[in-house]
Length: 289
Ligand code: ATR
Image 1 (cartoon, rainbow, N blue to C red):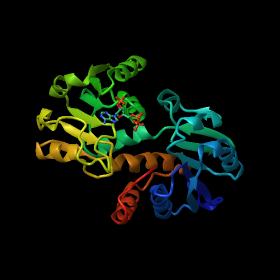
Image 2 (image 1 turned 30 degrees about the horizontal axis):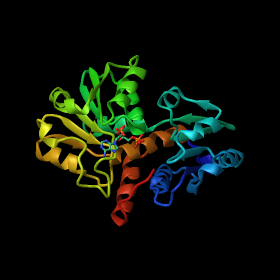
Image 3 (image 1 turned 60 degrees about the vertical axis):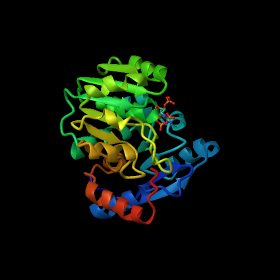
Image 4 (image 1 turned 135 degrees about the horizontal axis):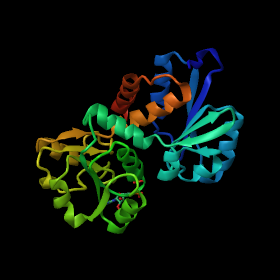
């Protein structure tokens, strides 16, 4: 449904800090490109203001709200309904206002998987996937990967118990195993795809790697959720070993693309969104959703 004939669409992102968010630039490009009248604002909301602000945005007729740090978990209790994926992941990054009812969804995982499939690995079915990390970011990614029918997902995490708990929690979704990090060599040996969901290698600690790159054989696809820098040390070393690599920018773009599609019913102009973010990053490489 094209909304341009109705009221201008009110959209925004809440978080704290929010000043460096690239979401307004990306979504304004999407609105322009699709000809939909609307506005997307960055709204700084502190934890003590969260409940009040959500009520105010509902009152003001906001159609869509993205949610970023530190509200992705706490916002859930302010909403009327949660999608299955948001409930199981335990976090919301996108709110859709359906006539006053606020529905929470999570587009981070599906956004990541769409990016991975479009940019690096067309088919995930039957693949062996190693995921580094077992925190909040890993949850969204693993939940979405499980829907792609991989042969197995192996979790490697510094704190093995955390990976084991996640593997146990989601054993109904896929063949998921947890290995202690000292068994990384064994896991990588059988991997088709290796995904870093930890913050290791993120600006300013750009010299760190979450995995010994010498373990890579060169045939794996190596993916990193980090987009600052666009090419992490892990990705650079993987590329130098012959691996196909995939950076985190696409995840940011596609989580926004899904949100845009839920709000407008119109296919998201993904390339215009990506171009707007990249152009803005040339001025300042920091991205926050
Ligand atoms: P996020 O929401 O970004 O995933 P998180 O829930 O705090 O943040 O999880 C961070 C993940 O990165 C965890 O898997 C963490 O490992 P632990 O569970 O052992 O804490 C991992 N991580 C962070 N810093 C790390 C480091 N220096 N070395 C190895 N793993 C690290």
